[in-house]
Length: 426
Image (cartoon, rainbow, N blue to C red; front, side, top):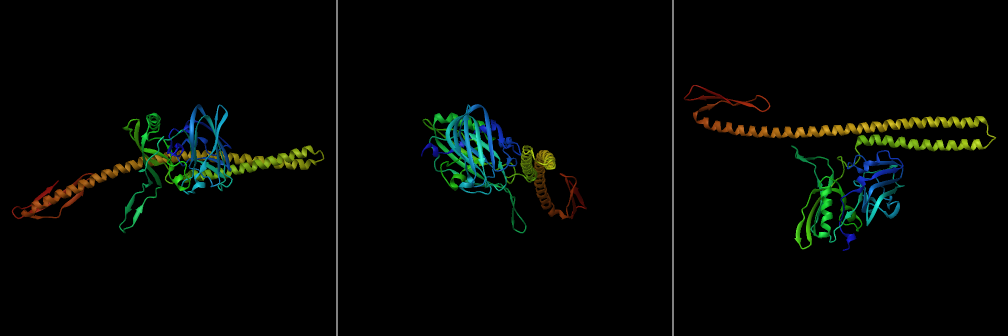
């Protein structure tokens, strides 16, 4: 098996350290491509987009991935790498929607020859995109590590679901509505010493905190190509085991990172504002087109010396009206964008408050469990008291009183055959 067919993992993402720009100007910040959250994609109005990135120092790349997008199956994506302004590589990225359409995940990727570069340009054209805008959630570009000797059989792949289930009194089974995610476990049993240092440094860099892009079968097609390729994180860091002369073994455990919220898509609050912004952006484009047309008419009338003054004034008045309308729409757009920023900040605060409340709930539930255990122990003690007193008389009904949240008082009234009466409280 050639090395081009072997497992590939992009661990160090150069895109996170690049200075990004975009044409046309995006509705949401282009630096959203550096965020792990699926709720904050970079969005551009229209069906084409050019993303550029500049690096402070030259790096080496051999893979690129665009994750959490809204591409159609016919999208065209071109990646160009430059070094000191000279083009050194141009390749295409393949969309999973064209390979094997998926309604829950949308991404594009490709691997290529290791190439030194200090600038990249990604051109996306998606004329059949029915959304009238292009979303890109995450950019990954960098060196794709690939072992000289590939993985062996024995790897494990599947889906996990963290939804909690509860059996009801009516015997139905209720479940949370959490997304499934992919998991992957595999060993590399034949890493050479010449590879160990690079793999070890990369694993130490990403740890369990940073995202990686893994592709188990980079040169296959169909469902096998996309099922075994995903954005994820290490959930366990394997240890290098000396398996023999110039040979190391290493175990990998990776889980897919669907995104920053429960559904893996844009949250409803952001989506509402982004929808308004999209509409306003489209209005701006239409008004700018109208203004350009009116200015062209004015130029034509100015060139034609025989034009009537009232005709010229009519076109100028219409131009002034459209320009005023454009100013109004642009002001409204600015307001909505500011509201979106405020709403997202409020959402972040609410999510933080929710996390605190959930932690408090866990604490209260733990205290409740402890209290219930103490009640069970107390009931057991009372049972023993009843057994010890039964031979000496009649025990009246016990009274269990809650004094406060953690203290109970028990009153025992005992009428004995050989004593007048005994009352015990503890």
